[in-house]
Length: 188
Image (cartoon, helix red, strand yellow):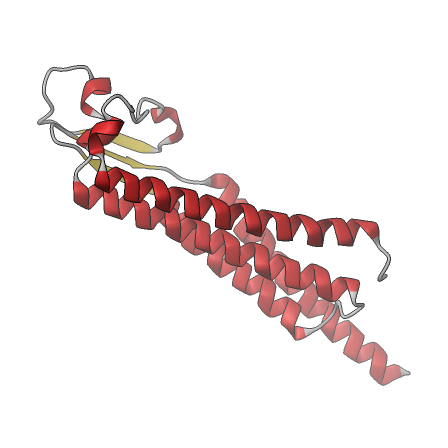
């Protein structure tokens, strides 16, 4: 099993994905800091909030001006509290995905090392499920406060829910595999 190219590819892709996530977190942090230092640079940078089809529920604030929403929802008019909340939400999401990928990499490495049915893999799948639940909670709610209006949207990330169920099912499959392996070891 140590020469399995598919497992090697999965482990390599996990490492590449973790590196990309780290670089993206650094990039987002750089933009966040630059936004704090020079808000005028972002005068014309619009935030696209018209994609309401992704939201289960969305609303624009009632106390908006009569101006076009593309003039209200610009990055330079985003209130500081909203900016910080959004930054930490994005950063938290990246961290949770990074941790999920790390757990997945551990599972692939143990399968490569022919240690497939171990309690560590069951715990890793359960940990992935919990991390994805946290990510679903973080990513399901958007709220932006601007100088002349607000935006709020709630979405149900069905893909994430599917991955949560899949991870928890895999944990149970590996748990049953451990029981069968132990039973088989006792028989021999």
